[in-house]
Image (tube, rainbow, N blue to C red; front, side, top):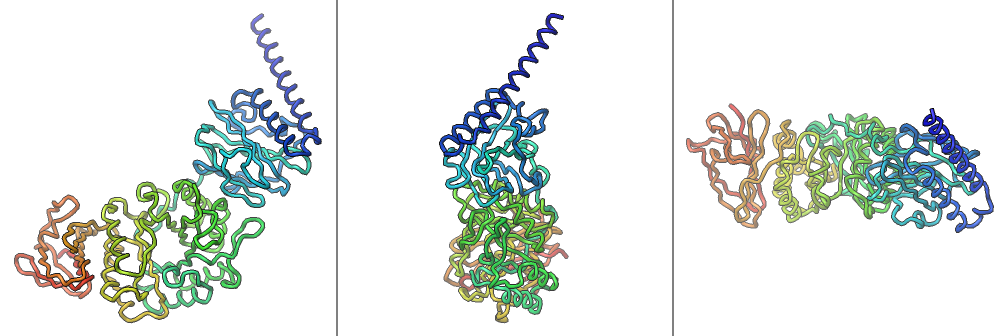
Length: 562
Protein backbone atom coordinates (compact mmCIF):
# COMPACT_ATOMS: atom_id res chain seq x y z
CA UNK A 1 0.00 0.00 0.00
CA UNK A 2 2.81 2.38 0.88
CA UNK A 3 4.45 1.67 -2.50
CA UNK A 4 1.20 2.30 -4.34
CA UNK A 5 0.63 5.55 -2.45
CA UNK A 6 4.18 6.65 -3.10
CA UNK A 7 3.78 5.87 -6.79
CA UNK A 8 0.51 7.85 -6.86
CA UNK A 9 2.08 10.85 -5.15
CA UNK A 10 5.00 10.66 -7.56
CA UNK A 11 2.69 10.71 -10.58
CA UNK A 12 0.68 13.62 -9.15
CA UNK A 13 3.91 15.52 -8.59
CA UNK A 14 5.00 14.92 -12.16
CA UNK A 15 1.63 16.11 -13.47
CA UNK A 16 1.80 19.28 -11.35
CA UNK A 17 5.33 19.98 -12.55
CA UNK A 18 4.30 19.42 -16.17
CA UNK A 19 1.31 21.75 -15.74
CA UNK A 20 3.52 24.40 -14.13
CA UNK A 21 5.88 24.18 -17.10
CA UNK A 22 2.98 24.51 -19.53
CA UNK A 23 1.69 27.57 -17.68
CA UNK A 24 5.16 29.10 -17.72
CA UNK A 25 5.37 28.42 -21.46
CA UNK A 26 2.03 30.16 -21.98
CA UNK A 27 3.19 33.19 -20.08
CA UNK A 28 6.38 33.39 -22.09
CA UNK A 29 4.53 33.11 -25.38
CA UNK A 30 2.02 35.81 -24.48
CA UNK A 31 4.60 38.42 -23.56
CA UNK A 32 4.35 40.20 -26.90
CA UNK A 33 6.82 42.94 -26.18
CA UNK A 34 9.52 40.25 -26.04
CA UNK A 35 9.09 39.52 -29.72
CA UNK A 36 9.04 43.07 -31.01
CA UNK A 37 12.70 42.70 -31.89
CA UNK A 38 14.41 39.80 -33.61
CA UNK A 39 17.01 39.06 -30.95
CA UNK A 40 14.43 38.84 -28.19
CA UNK A 41 12.21 36.67 -30.42
CA UNK A 42 15.00 34.20 -31.01
CA UNK A 43 15.73 34.14 -27.28
CA UNK A 44 12.07 33.46 -26.52
CA UNK A 45 11.84 30.55 -28.97
CA UNK A 46 15.09 29.13 -27.65
CA UNK A 47 13.73 29.25 -24.08
CA UNK A 48 10.55 27.49 -25.16
CA UNK A 49 12.56 24.82 -26.97
CA UNK A 50 14.74 24.26 -23.91
CA UNK A 51 11.71 24.03 -21.64
CA UNK A 52 10.00 21.50 -23.88
CA UNK A 53 13.17 19.49 -24.17
CA UNK A 54 13.74 19.60 -20.39
CA UNK A 55 10.16 18.60 -19.69
CA UNK A 56 10.19 15.53 -21.92
CA UNK A 57 13.68 14.11 -22.28
CA UNK A 58 12.15 11.70 -24.79
CA UNK A 59 9.50 11.58 -27.50
CA UNK A 60 6.45 11.76 -25.21
CA UNK A 61 5.48 15.42 -24.98
CA UNK A 62 4.21 15.98 -28.50
CA UNK A 63 3.95 12.36 -29.54
CA UNK A 64 1.73 10.08 -27.47
CA UNK A 65 1.54 6.43 -28.54
CA UNK A 66 2.78 7.40 -32.01
CA UNK A 67 0.12 10.06 -32.47
CA UNK A 68 0.71 13.79 -32.64
CA UNK A 69 -0.49 15.88 -29.74
CA UNK A 70 -1.66 19.33 -30.79
CA UNK A 71 0.52 22.19 -29.63
CA UNK A 72 -2.65 23.92 -28.46
CA UNK A 73 -2.82 21.27 -25.74
CA UNK A 74 0.56 22.47 -24.56
CA UNK A 75 0.21 26.21 -25.23
CA UNK A 76 -3.31 27.39 -24.60
CA UNK A 77 -4.66 29.93 -27.04
CA UNK A 78 -2.41 28.91 -29.94
CA UNK A 79 -4.76 28.52 -32.90
CA UNK A 80 -4.01 25.96 -35.61
CA UNK A 81 -3.52 26.83 -39.24
CA UNK A 82 -5.91 25.83 -41.99
CA UNK A 83 -4.00 22.72 -43.02
CA UNK A 84 -4.55 20.11 -45.70
CA UNK A 85 -1.96 17.55 -44.60
CA UNK A 86 -1.51 14.64 -45.07
CA UNK A 87 -2.29 15.12 -48.74
CA UNK A 88 0.84 14.30 -50.77
CA UNK A 89 2.52 17.52 -51.77
CA UNK A 90 1.78 19.42 -48.59
CA UNK A 91 4.29 17.63 -46.42
CA UNK A 92 6.80 14.98 -47.37
CA UNK A 93 10.23 13.61 -46.56
CA UNK A 94 12.45 12.21 -49.32
CA UNK A 95 15.37 10.77 -47.40
CA UNK A 96 17.34 13.90 -46.65
CA UNK A 97 14.91 16.76 -47.14
CA UNK A 98 11.54 17.90 -45.89
CA UNK A 99 9.13 20.17 -47.70
CA UNK A 100 5.97 21.52 -46.12
CA UNK A 101 3.33 24.13 -46.80
CA UNK A 102 1.27 26.57 -44.78
CA UNK A 103 -1.58 28.92 -45.61
CA UNK A 104 -0.72 32.07 -43.64
CA UNK A 105 1.28 34.88 -45.20
CA UNK A 106 2.50 36.07 -41.80
CA UNK A 107 4.68 33.13 -40.84
CA UNK A 108 8.25 34.30 -40.39
CA UNK A 109 9.85 31.66 -38.16
CA UNK A 110 9.77 27.90 -37.75
CA UNK A 111 10.60 25.65 -34.83
CA UNK A 112 11.41 22.11 -35.99
CA UNK A 113 11.39 19.25 -33.52
CA UNK A 114 13.34 16.19 -34.63
CA UNK A 115 12.30 13.50 -32.21
CA UNK A 116 13.26 9.88 -31.68
CA UNK A 117 14.19 7.38 -29.00
CA UNK A 118 17.79 8.52 -28.89
CA UNK A 119 17.76 11.88 -30.60
CA UNK A 120 15.59 14.84 -29.56
CA UNK A 121 16.62 18.18 -31.01
CA UNK A 122 15.05 21.47 -31.90
CA UNK A 123 16.01 23.87 -34.67
CA UNK A 124 14.90 27.42 -35.28
CA UNK A 125 14.78 28.99 -38.75
CA UNK A 126 13.93 32.41 -40.06
CA UNK A 127 11.63 32.13 -43.06
CA UNK A 128 11.70 35.70 -44.33
CA UNK A 129 14.93 37.35 -45.35
CA UNK A 130 17.57 34.63 -45.25
CA UNK A 131 16.03 31.22 -44.50
CA UNK A 132 18.24 29.07 -42.37
CA UNK A 133 20.53 31.89 -41.25
CA UNK A 134 20.07 30.92 -37.61
CA UNK A 135 20.87 27.27 -38.28
CA UNK A 136 23.04 26.89 -41.41
CA UNK A 137 23.10 23.12 -40.92
CA UNK A 138 19.47 23.19 -42.01
CA UNK A 139 20.17 24.34 -45.54
CA UNK A 140 16.95 25.52 -47.23
CA UNK A 141 16.22 23.95 -50.60
CA UNK A 142 13.16 25.93 -51.65
CA UNK A 143 11.36 29.03 -50.51
CA UNK A 144 8.19 30.62 -51.84
CA UNK A 145 5.00 32.09 -50.47
CA UNK A 146 3.42 29.33 -48.44
CA UNK A 147 6.19 26.79 -49.11
CA UNK A 148 9.45 25.97 -47.45
CA UNK A 149 11.97 23.19 -47.92
CA UNK A 150 14.98 22.28 -45.83
CA UNK A 151 17.71 19.70 -45.58
CA UNK A 152 17.78 17.64 -42.43
CA UNK A 153 21.26 17.21 -40.90
CA UNK A 154 22.66 13.79 -41.70
CA UNK A 155 23.34 13.11 -38.03
CA UNK A 156 19.69 13.49 -37.01
CA UNK A 157 18.27 10.03 -36.33
CA UNK A 158 14.68 10.88 -35.55
CA UNK A 159 11.42 9.03 -35.96
CA UNK A 160 9.36 12.16 -36.61
CA UNK A 161 9.69 15.76 -37.63
CA UNK A 162 7.18 18.17 -36.10
CA UNK A 163 6.83 21.77 -37.31
CA UNK A 164 5.68 24.76 -35.26
CA UNK A 165 5.26 27.95 -37.22
CA UNK A 166 5.55 31.36 -35.54
CA UNK A 167 3.13 34.03 -36.76
CA UNK A 168 4.56 37.49 -36.13
CA UNK A 169 1.18 39.13 -36.63
CA UNK A 170 -0.35 37.68 -33.48
CA UNK A 171 2.69 36.30 -31.66
CA UNK A 172 1.43 32.74 -31.58
CA UNK A 173 2.79 29.36 -32.54
CA UNK A 174 0.87 27.25 -35.03
CA UNK A 175 1.23 23.53 -35.20
CA UNK A 176 1.15 21.30 -38.24
CA UNK A 177 -1.67 18.88 -37.52
CA UNK A 178 0.24 15.87 -38.84
CA UNK A 179 3.99 15.50 -38.31
CA UNK A 180 6.14 13.64 -40.81
CA UNK A 181 6.72 10.06 -39.72
CA UNK A 182 10.09 9.16 -41.15
CA UNK A 183 9.70 5.41 -40.78
CA UNK A 184 6.09 5.25 -41.93
CA UNK A 185 5.77 8.44 -43.87
CA UNK A 186 3.31 9.80 -46.39
CA UNK A 187 5.72 8.64 -49.05
CA UNK A 188 5.16 5.02 -48.10
CA UNK A 189 1.72 5.31 -49.67
CA UNK A 190 3.19 6.23 -53.04
CA UNK A 191 6.75 4.92 -52.91
CA UNK A 192 6.81 3.20 -56.26
CA UNK A 193 6.69 3.78 -59.99
CA UNK A 194 4.12 2.64 -62.53
CA UNK A 195 5.40 -0.84 -63.33
CA UNK A 196 3.51 -1.52 -66.56
CA UNK A 197 5.08 1.33 -68.54
CA UNK A 198 7.93 1.26 -71.06
CA UNK A 199 8.10 -2.52 -71.34
CA UNK A 200 9.99 -1.79 -74.54
CA UNK A 201 12.12 1.34 -75.04
CA UNK A 202 9.98 4.46 -75.59
CA UNK A 203 9.73 5.78 -79.14
CA UNK A 204 8.79 9.32 -80.05
CA UNK A 205 10.05 12.81 -80.81
CA UNK A 206 11.63 15.56 -78.69
CA UNK A 207 11.95 19.22 -79.60
CA UNK A 208 15.41 19.98 -78.20
CA UNK A 209 17.94 18.69 -80.75
CA UNK A 210 16.46 20.64 -83.66
CA UNK A 211 14.57 23.55 -82.12
CA UNK A 212 16.18 24.16 -78.73
CA UNK A 213 14.25 26.90 -76.94
CA UNK A 214 12.24 27.86 -80.02
CA UNK A 215 9.09 25.89 -79.21
CA UNK A 216 5.47 26.94 -79.52
CA UNK A 217 1.98 25.56 -79.89
CA UNK A 218 1.90 25.77 -83.69
CA UNK A 219 5.16 23.82 -84.03
CA UNK A 220 4.06 21.02 -81.72
CA UNK A 221 0.71 20.62 -83.48
CA UNK A 222 2.43 20.46 -86.87
CA UNK A 223 4.94 17.89 -85.58
CA UNK A 224 2.11 15.73 -84.26
CA UNK A 225 0.39 15.93 -87.66
CA UNK A 226 3.65 15.04 -89.42
CA UNK A 227 4.29 12.04 -87.16
CA UNK A 228 1.00 10.59 -88.31
CA UNK A 229 1.10 11.56 -91.98
CA UNK A 230 4.74 10.48 -92.48
CA UNK A 231 4.09 6.95 -91.28
CA UNK A 232 6.21 7.31 -88.16
CA UNK A 233 3.25 6.62 -85.92
CA UNK A 234 2.63 3.36 -87.79
CA UNK A 235 6.32 2.51 -87.36
CA UNK A 236 5.95 2.72 -83.56
CA UNK A 237 6.64 6.34 -82.60
CA UNK A 238 4.05 7.71 -80.17
CA UNK A 239 5.44 10.32 -77.75
CA UNK A 240 5.51 14.02 -78.63
CA UNK A 241 7.79 15.58 -76.00
CA UNK A 242 8.24 19.31 -75.47
CA UNK A 243 11.65 19.99 -73.97
CA UNK A 244 12.76 23.15 -72.13
CA UNK A 245 11.29 26.66 -72.51
CA UNK A 246 7.57 25.89 -72.47
CA UNK A 247 7.24 27.25 -68.92
CA UNK A 248 5.88 30.73 -68.32
CA UNK A 249 6.32 30.87 -64.54
CA UNK A 250 4.46 30.04 -61.36
CA UNK A 251 1.31 31.57 -59.93
CA UNK A 252 1.31 32.97 -56.40
CA UNK A 253 0.20 29.60 -55.07
CA UNK A 254 3.21 27.97 -56.75
CA UNK A 255 1.34 26.32 -59.61
CA UNK A 256 3.31 26.07 -62.85
CA UNK A 257 1.85 27.55 -66.03
CA UNK A 258 2.86 27.57 -69.69
CA UNK A 259 4.30 30.55 -71.55
CA UNK A 260 1.11 32.26 -72.75
CA UNK A 261 2.70 33.78 -75.83
CA UNK A 262 4.13 30.50 -77.04
CA UNK A 263 1.22 28.32 -75.93
CA UNK A 264 -1.85 30.57 -75.94
CA UNK A 265 -4.33 27.73 -75.44
CA UNK A 266 -2.37 26.06 -72.66
CA UNK A 267 -1.01 22.57 -72.17
CA UNK A 268 -4.32 20.82 -71.62
CA UNK A 269 -5.46 21.93 -75.05
CA UNK A 270 -2.20 20.71 -76.61
CA UNK A 271 -2.37 17.36 -74.82
CA UNK A 272 -5.93 16.86 -76.03
CA UNK A 273 -4.89 17.54 -79.62
CA UNK A 274 -1.96 15.11 -79.43
CA UNK A 275 -4.16 12.46 -77.84
CA UNK A 276 -6.74 12.93 -80.58
CA UNK A 277 -4.06 11.79 -83.04
CA UNK A 278 -3.56 8.54 -81.14
CA UNK A 279 -0.26 9.84 -79.75
CA UNK A 280 1.01 10.56 -76.23
CA UNK A 281 2.08 13.85 -74.69
CA UNK A 282 5.45 14.41 -73.02
CA UNK A 283 6.86 17.36 -71.13
CA UNK A 284 10.11 18.54 -69.55
CA UNK A 285 11.10 19.82 -66.13
CA UNK A 286 14.11 19.85 -63.84
CA UNK A 287 14.99 18.50 -60.39
CA UNK A 288 16.59 21.82 -59.44
CA UNK A 289 15.25 25.27 -58.71
CA UNK A 290 15.49 26.21 -62.40
CA UNK A 291 15.63 24.39 -65.71
CA UNK A 292 18.78 24.47 -67.82
CA UNK A 293 17.36 27.50 -69.65
CA UNK A 294 16.42 29.35 -66.48
CA UNK A 295 12.71 28.51 -66.38
CA UNK A 296 11.05 27.38 -63.12
CA UNK A 297 12.35 24.02 -61.91
CA UNK A 298 10.52 21.42 -59.89
CA UNK A 299 12.43 21.52 -56.61
CA UNK A 300 9.98 21.92 -53.74
CA UNK A 301 6.99 21.66 -56.11
CA UNK A 302 7.16 17.97 -56.98
CA UNK A 303 3.70 16.93 -55.82
CA UNK A 304 2.09 20.15 -56.97
CA UNK A 305 3.64 19.81 -60.45
CA UNK A 306 2.72 16.13 -60.66
CA UNK A 307 -0.93 16.95 -59.99
CA UNK A 308 -0.79 19.69 -62.62
CA UNK A 309 0.76 17.34 -65.18
CA UNK A 310 -1.90 14.73 -64.44
CA UNK A 311 -4.62 17.32 -64.93
CA UNK A 312 -3.10 18.35 -68.25
CA UNK A 313 -2.87 14.75 -69.48
CA UNK A 314 0.92 14.32 -69.51
CA UNK A 315 2.15 10.81 -70.38
CA UNK A 316 5.94 11.28 -70.27
CA UNK A 317 8.22 13.44 -68.11
CA UNK A 318 11.86 14.18 -68.84
CA UNK A 319 13.47 15.45 -65.62
CA UNK A 320 16.77 17.30 -65.99
CA UNK A 321 19.55 18.08 -63.47
CA UNK A 322 20.45 21.77 -63.79
CA UNK A 323 20.59 24.18 -60.81
CA UNK A 324 20.59 21.35 -58.29
CA UNK A 325 23.45 22.60 -56.08
CA UNK A 326 24.17 19.94 -53.43
CA UNK A 327 20.97 17.93 -53.94
CA UNK A 328 21.14 14.17 -53.70
CA UNK A 329 20.20 12.74 -57.10
CA UNK A 330 18.58 9.55 -55.90
CA UNK A 331 16.50 11.38 -53.27
CA UNK A 332 15.47 14.11 -55.71
CA UNK A 333 14.36 11.70 -58.41
CA UNK A 334 12.65 9.48 -55.85
CA UNK A 335 10.62 12.48 -54.66
CA UNK A 336 9.41 13.15 -58.21
CA UNK A 337 8.69 9.48 -58.83
CA UNK A 338 6.52 9.34 -55.72
CA UNK A 339 4.78 12.56 -56.67
CA UNK A 340 3.89 11.16 -60.09
CA UNK A 341 2.55 7.98 -58.56
CA UNK A 342 0.54 9.88 -55.96
CA UNK A 343 -1.02 12.00 -58.73
CA UNK A 344 -2.49 8.80 -60.14
CA UNK A 345 -1.78 9.21 -63.86
CA UNK A 346 0.71 6.73 -65.38
CA UNK A 347 3.69 8.74 -66.61
CA UNK A 348 6.90 7.42 -68.18
CA UNK A 349 9.67 8.94 -66.04
CA UNK A 350 12.90 9.87 -67.85
CA UNK A 351 15.81 10.60 -65.50
CA UNK A 352 18.35 13.01 -66.96
CA UNK A 353 21.32 13.43 -64.61
CA UNK A 354 23.68 12.89 -67.59
CA UNK A 355 25.09 9.76 -65.97
CA UNK A 356 26.90 11.82 -63.34
CA UNK A 357 25.73 9.66 -60.43
CA UNK A 358 25.68 6.29 -62.22
CA UNK A 359 21.89 6.02 -62.28
CA UNK A 360 22.03 2.58 -63.87
CA UNK A 361 22.98 1.30 -60.39
CA UNK A 362 20.00 2.78 -58.54
CA UNK A 363 17.37 4.16 -60.90
CA UNK A 364 15.72 0.91 -61.94
CA UNK A 365 13.07 1.25 -59.22
CA UNK A 366 12.70 4.99 -59.71
CA UNK A 367 12.50 5.76 -63.42
CA UNK A 368 11.80 4.05 -66.73
CA UNK A 369 14.95 5.32 -68.41
CA UNK A 370 18.04 7.26 -67.39
CA UNK A 371 20.66 9.16 -69.30
CA UNK A 372 24.09 7.55 -69.28
CA UNK A 373 26.11 10.47 -70.70
CA UNK A 374 26.08 14.17 -71.41
CA UNK A 375 24.19 15.63 -74.36
CA UNK A 376 24.66 14.16 -77.82
CA UNK A 377 25.98 16.41 -80.60
CA UNK A 378 25.14 16.15 -84.28
CA UNK A 379 28.43 14.61 -85.39
CA UNK A 380 30.07 11.21 -85.80
CA UNK A 381 32.62 11.64 -83.00
CA UNK A 382 29.85 12.33 -80.49
CA UNK A 383 28.01 9.16 -81.51
CA UNK A 384 31.17 7.07 -81.06
CA UNK A 385 32.03 8.66 -77.72
CA UNK A 386 28.58 7.89 -76.34
CA UNK A 387 28.63 4.37 -77.80
CA UNK A 388 31.90 3.61 -76.04
CA UNK A 389 30.37 4.47 -72.66
CA UNK A 390 27.61 1.89 -73.15
CA UNK A 391 29.88 -1.14 -73.45
CA UNK A 392 29.54 -2.31 -69.83
CA UNK A 393 25.96 -1.21 -69.14
CA UNK A 394 24.06 -4.03 -70.84
CA UNK A 395 23.29 -5.83 -67.56
CA UNK A 396 21.29 -2.86 -66.22
CA UNK A 397 18.77 -2.60 -69.07
CA UNK A 398 15.50 -4.47 -69.34
CA UNK A 399 11.72 -4.09 -69.66
CA UNK A 400 10.62 -0.97 -67.79
CA UNK A 401 14.16 0.29 -67.10
CA UNK A 402 16.44 1.36 -69.93
CA UNK A 403 19.83 2.96 -70.42
CA UNK A 404 19.39 6.16 -72.42
CA UNK A 405 22.36 7.29 -74.56
CA UNK A 406 20.36 10.42 -75.49
CA UNK A 407 18.07 11.36 -78.34
CA UNK A 408 18.61 10.72 -82.04
CA UNK A 409 20.34 13.20 -84.35
CA UNK A 410 19.21 11.41 -87.51
CA UNK A 411 18.19 13.91 -90.20
CA UNK A 412 19.61 17.03 -88.56
CA UNK A 413 22.31 17.49 -91.20
CA UNK A 414 25.47 17.08 -89.15
CA UNK A 415 26.14 13.55 -90.39
CA UNK A 416 26.03 11.72 -93.70
CA UNK A 417 23.28 9.30 -94.58
CA UNK A 418 25.72 6.45 -93.92
CA UNK A 419 26.49 7.83 -90.47
CA UNK A 420 22.79 8.37 -89.72
CA UNK A 421 22.12 4.71 -90.59
CA UNK A 422 24.92 3.62 -88.27
CA UNK A 423 23.70 5.90 -85.47
CA UNK A 424 20.15 4.56 -85.73
CA UNK A 425 21.30 0.94 -85.94
CA UNK A 426 23.55 1.20 -82.90
CA UNK A 427 20.84 2.81 -80.77
CA UNK A 428 18.47 -0.02 -81.73
CA UNK A 429 21.11 -2.60 -80.79
CA UNK A 430 21.50 -0.87 -77.43
CA UNK A 431 17.75 -1.16 -76.73
CA UNK A 432 17.85 2.61 -76.35
CA UNK A 433 14.82 4.88 -76.43
CA UNK A 434 14.30 5.93 -80.05
CA UNK A 435 13.44 9.59 -79.62
CA UNK A 436 13.76 11.42 -82.94
CA UNK A 437 15.04 14.98 -82.81
CA UNK A 438 14.67 16.27 -86.36
CA UNK A 439 12.05 18.38 -88.12
CA UNK A 440 9.44 15.79 -89.03
CA UNK A 441 7.69 18.29 -91.30
CA UNK A 442 10.65 18.52 -93.69
CA UNK A 443 12.38 15.15 -93.81
CA UNK A 444 14.28 13.82 -96.80
CA UNK A 445 13.27 10.46 -98.20
CA UNK A 446 16.53 8.97 -96.90
CA UNK A 447 15.90 10.23 -93.37
CA UNK A 448 12.37 8.85 -93.33
CA UNK A 449 13.59 5.45 -94.58
CA UNK A 450 16.11 5.30 -91.76
CA UNK A 451 13.69 6.30 -89.02
CA UNK A 452 10.98 3.91 -90.22
CA UNK A 453 13.08 0.81 -90.96
CA UNK A 454 10.80 -1.64 -89.21
CA UNK A 455 13.37 -4.44 -89.19
CA UNK A 456 15.86 -2.28 -87.27
CA UNK A 457 13.11 -0.95 -85.01
CA UNK A 458 12.12 -4.55 -84.23
CA UNK A 459 15.56 -5.11 -82.68
CA UNK A 460 15.05 -2.15 -80.39
CA UNK A 461 11.51 -3.19 -79.47
CA UNK A 462 12.29 -6.87 -78.96
CA UNK A 463 10.29 -8.08 -75.91
CA UNK A 464 13.26 -9.86 -74.34
CA UNK A 465 14.66 -6.41 -73.60
CA UNK A 466 18.37 -7.24 -73.84
CA UNK A 467 20.92 -4.54 -74.59
CA UNK A 468 23.73 -5.47 -76.98
CA UNK A 469 27.21 -6.17 -75.68
CA UNK A 470 30.45 -5.42 -77.46
CA UNK A 471 31.94 -8.71 -78.65
CA UNK A 472 34.99 -7.45 -80.52
CA UNK A 473 37.00 -4.24 -80.79
CA UNK A 474 39.98 -4.34 -83.15
CA UNK A 475 41.60 -1.40 -84.92
CA UNK A 476 38.49 0.69 -85.50
CA UNK A 477 36.29 -2.33 -86.21
CA UNK A 478 33.70 -3.48 -83.66
CA UNK A 479 31.11 -6.25 -83.42
CA UNK A 480 28.04 -5.81 -81.22
CA UNK A 481 25.71 -8.73 -80.44
CA UNK A 482 22.16 -8.55 -79.10
CA UNK A 483 20.13 -11.46 -77.76
CA UNK A 484 16.52 -11.56 -78.95
CA UNK A 485 13.36 -13.38 -78.00
CA UNK A 486 12.73 -16.87 -79.43
CA UNK A 487 16.46 -17.70 -79.11
CA UNK A 488 17.32 -15.36 -81.97
CA UNK A 489 20.16 -12.85 -82.23
CA UNK A 490 21.24 -9.70 -84.00
CA UNK A 491 24.76 -8.74 -85.02
CA UNK A 492 26.02 -5.27 -85.90
CA UNK A 493 29.36 -4.83 -87.63
CA UNK A 494 30.74 -1.30 -87.23
CA UNK A 495 33.53 0.38 -89.16
CA UNK A 496 34.39 3.36 -86.96
CA UNK A 497 37.44 4.32 -89.00
CA UNK A 498 37.89 6.72 -91.91
CA UNK A 499 39.02 3.90 -94.20
CA UNK A 500 37.28 1.14 -96.16
CA UNK A 501 37.56 -2.21 -94.39
CA UNK A 502 37.32 -5.68 -95.90
CA UNK A 503 36.14 -7.98 -93.14
CA UNK A 504 35.70 -11.72 -92.86
CA UNK A 505 32.44 -12.65 -91.14
CA UNK A 506 32.04 -16.14 -89.65
CA UNK A 507 28.35 -16.51 -88.80
CA UNK A 508 28.97 -19.82 -86.99
CA UNK A 509 31.14 -18.01 -84.47
CA UNK A 510 28.86 -14.99 -84.17
CA UNK A 511 25.77 -17.11 -83.57
CA UNK A 512 27.45 -18.94 -80.69
CA UNK A 513 28.90 -15.81 -79.13
CA UNK A 514 27.31 -14.39 -76.03
CA UNK A 515 28.53 -12.61 -72.92
CA UNK A 516 30.14 -15.89 -71.84
CA UNK A 517 31.25 -16.83 -75.38
CA UNK A 518 29.53 -20.23 -75.18
CA UNK A 519 26.03 -20.31 -76.71
CA UNK A 520 25.21 -23.81 -78.04
CA UNK A 521 23.35 -22.59 -81.14
CA UNK A 522 23.77 -24.23 -84.54
CA UNK A 523 23.78 -22.16 -87.71
CA UNK A 524 21.91 -24.90 -89.60
CA UNK A 525 18.80 -24.01 -87.59
CA UNK A 526 18.81 -20.36 -88.67
CA UNK A 527 18.58 -18.09 -91.67
CA UNK A 528 20.61 -14.87 -91.73
CA UNK A 529 18.90 -11.68 -92.88
CA UNK A 530 20.49 -8.34 -93.82
CA UNK A 531 18.26 -5.74 -92.17
CA UNK A 532 19.25 -2.80 -94.38
CA UNK A 533 19.20 -4.72 -97.66
CA UNK A 534 16.01 -6.49 -96.51
CA UNK A 535 17.08 -9.87 -97.86
CA UNK A 536 18.37 -13.23 -96.67
CA UNK A 537 22.01 -14.16 -97.24
CA UNK A 538 23.05 -17.17 -99.26
CA UNK A 539 25.70 -18.75 -97.06
CA UNK A 540 28.21 -21.42 -98.03
CA UNK A 541 28.59 -24.54 -95.92
CA UNK A 542 31.17 -22.86 -93.71
CA UNK A 543 28.88 -19.90 -93.03
CA UNK A 544 31.56 -17.38 -93.93
CA UNK A 545 31.21 -14.21 -96.04
CA UNK A 546 33.53 -11.31 -96.88
CA UNK A 547 32.11 -7.82 -96.56
CA UNK A 548 33.43 -4.48 -97.81
CA UNK A 549 32.53 -1.77 -95.30
CA UNK A 550 32.77 1.95 -96.20
CA UNK A 551 34.01 4.38 -93.53
CA UNK A 552 31.55 5.03 -90.67
CA UNK A 553 29.19 2.29 -91.85
CA UNK A 554 27.39 -0.67 -90.34
CA UNK A 555 26.08 -4.04 -91.44
CA UNK A 556 23.22 -5.41 -89.37
CA UNK A 557 22.18 -9.06 -89.52
CA UNK A 558 19.52 -11.08 -87.75
CA UNK A 559 19.62 -14.80 -87.05
CA UNK A 560 16.03 -15.96 -87.66
CA UNK A 561 14.98 -19.47 -86.67
CA UNK A 562 13.86 -21.68 -89.52
